[in-house]
Image (cartoon, rainbow, N blue to C red):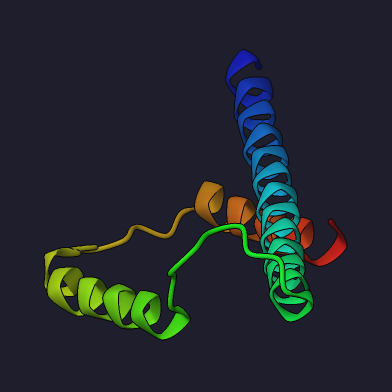
Amino acid sequence: MILAWTTILDFALTFVVGLLFGLAIKKGLVAFVLALVGFVIAGYVGLTFVPKISFSYEVTKFITYVVTYIHDIKLGAIAVSLTVILFLIGLAIGLWKG
């Protein structure tokens, strides 16, 4: 009987962690987009916070970094279990409703 309760509790906590991660990711993305909008508006008005930064240079540098290190990512065989599925469901709900 104890095993059943701990398993159910484990599944519930995995789902809740997925919800919290989804919420945190969504809030972080919203904050990032609002910061970008703020910098664009400030640049349009004539205020400069960070001098001599080119958006195209930063994008080019990021793409070069991704292309250089993309072959180092090895996911291997990802085991899909009930906990992974519950975490992904919680993550999706957290992103959607967060």
